[in-house]
Amino acid sequence: MASLSDAPAAARGFATERSAELFARAERVMPSGYTRDLVAQLPHPQYASHAQGCWLTDIDGNRRIDWVNNFTSMIHGHAPPAVVRVIAEQAGRLMNAVLPTEWEVGLAEHLVDRVPGIDRIRFTNSGTEANAIAVKAARAFTGRSKVAKIEGGYHGQFDLLEASHQPTAPLWGPAERPVPVPHNPATPQSLLDELVILPLNDIANSRAILAERAAELAAVIIDPWRLQAGMVSPRRDYLEMLREETARLDIVLIFDEVVSLRASHGGAQGLHGILPDLTTLGKIIGGGLPIGGVGGSAAVMSVFEMGRPDGKVKHSGTFTANPLSMATGLTSMRLLTRAALEDLSAKSERLREGLRRAIRDTGLPGDVTGDGSVSALMLTDQPTENFRQFAHALQNGLMARLLALQALLTEEGIFTLRGNFIGSTPMTDDDVDFTIAGATRAMRRLAEA
Image (tube, rainbow, N blue to C red; front, side):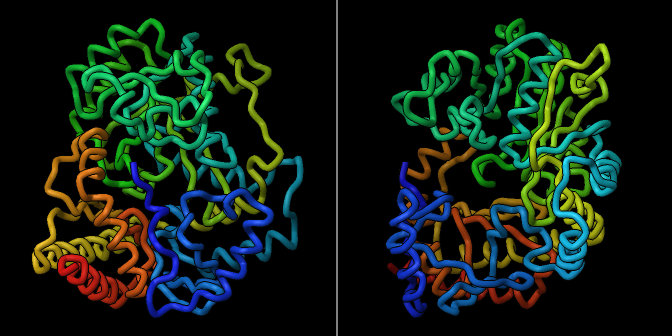
């Protein structure tokens, strides 16, 4: 599968000299010159300098509107004043200590009140870590070891759950019975044997697989909102089936809401009215700093009750629940009111309408998918109901169009990745209109190429 990292870094009309010099230094001390592969670009990336609100400036002075928002984590954009103040105040008081702080209790109380399926919560340092800890909890609670995930689902870089994130056709097995495909070389077969793959939105076959493997399965994990960076969505009836079957078979249902918490005030589970047994969180709950969280029903979360009969799982970490992340997280989440989310959703719908007009006017194939604050350009007429259909669309022109459009959007002062537009609360109607106008010009050039 092609990579969006092939998109050029240096768009026409933008300065790149300082970034090129910095990348030459980076290559001498880091493999490929990167720590984060998803930001890789040819011939080099543009290095960030500073940002304010929804606008990001690189070290060469190029200013772009930020529709990536650090992969959905910056829901209030850059340098929101209240968050900046609390960072400065807390850093001057206590950056870290082995003792807990009141900020941790406050953020836990807020999330328990906010997310319907969470009675108790513990904090981690990333979404990847949260998902790994959730698997431990499900195994301890059920006494079983295997985990089921959706083909094409992404749950961080824990190698068990990373398998079959982007499987390729020769290896992925029959559509009705997908097989685990390692994401990295030399992944132990013994680890892959602990994984069961479900075909997204295929209710009959997924139900049959769950029934057959129930005695072995500790958990089913799914992003209940937008798989594959927002371009493939689980249907509501599929989520309802998973909830029904996991409850009937005593399997722990995990909703990975690391991204989807921004779907509504109570996350995707609040939007759909479907409650999981465990919920994993990250990104926006840290207010821009590293964080993760595992929450769920009091019964399942009892496995963490150290010193009590139910306690089975030890969990800690040097930077877990650090005061800075707790302070920025609580401050940011308090700012993310229902009214703020509704306003952001309205601006995002304004964007989607404008992008759809641009598609119609330019004659490009496809549509704009999305809801809430997440939108995705699907420049294809091919179906994308599951990962395999999405992979076929990528191979049959979608990837090439996204790569070309990404470069053209950069020239227009619009920063996106993978055809996604992730909104933030400081965006104004003028910012949205700027984006629509620039995207329309970029799509017109793409259609004419």
